[in-house]
Image (tube, rainbow, N blue to C red; front, side, top):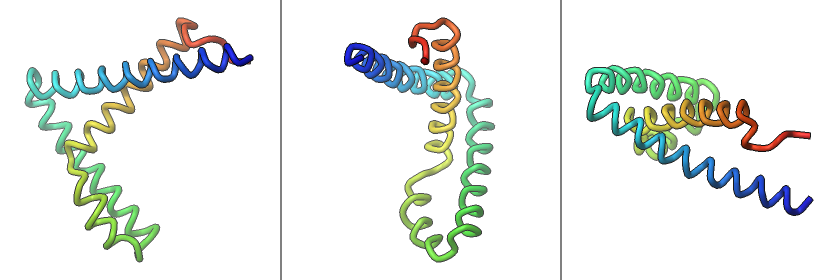
Length: 107
């Protein structure tokens, strides 16, 4: 049991490191080699950021001003794009790991 727990923890850490590396690689490749696509995705991410702001204003109107000044002031469209690329890369990588059985079987 402790060996399985340690093995799963090591697998999780390795997956996180690989995900971060692949995310930065994908973001950089988009920026360097596919500039038009990158610009389009940044504009799309800007729309996602605006939707997040609107949702926050709807759900927590009292905290919206503080969130605008802190959270959304620091997160621009490129940061949101990086987060979204990270989610896609993580989903793809974890699906591959599950399909190949490398991550171990769930019981």
